[in-house]
Amino acid sequence: MTGDDAEAYEAAGNFKVGMIPYAFEDGMDTILTNSPSWWSVFSDGNAEAAKAFLQWCSEDAAQQVLVEEAGFISPFNSCKYVANDPFAQTIVDYQTAGKTSGWHWLSMKEGLAQNYTGQVFADYAAGNLDADKFVQTMEQVIQACYAN
Image 1 (cartoon, rainbow, N blue to C red):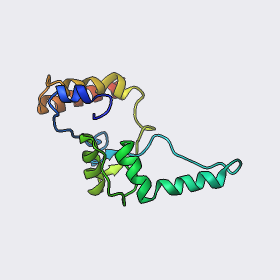
Image 2: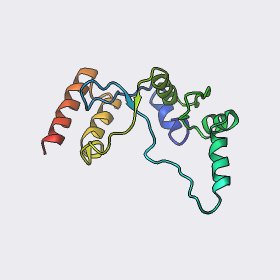
Image 3: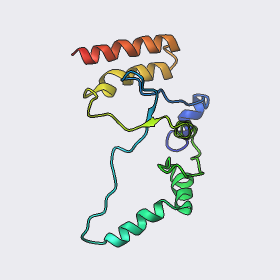
């Protein structure tokens, strides 16, 4: 929101940004935050250099670079930096509250976001739905998705 989309965000009024908790399982009130990929080090090649790089990524100086310069959200609870992006603070607040969980894509129906919920989020962001209508519509499209 402060990078490629900065002009659009400013034109939209620099509105407060939030995130809707994961609500596809009873009792879940977390946001999905883990990475859809993981780093690993193969035993052949430059294993020691790769391990050194990963170690560096966990250190304070690297956290500052990764967060403040690259705009990442740190996966480390010890990180004291927050990216200069209004969405970053939302994620950090959930992390601090212990309200994060991993992606549950193995149990999600394929196309849920692209074919069902994505448009509902877009309509809400555009102001075409109020909060109550957003919840009602989200319930309807998720039920329709899993009914097929």
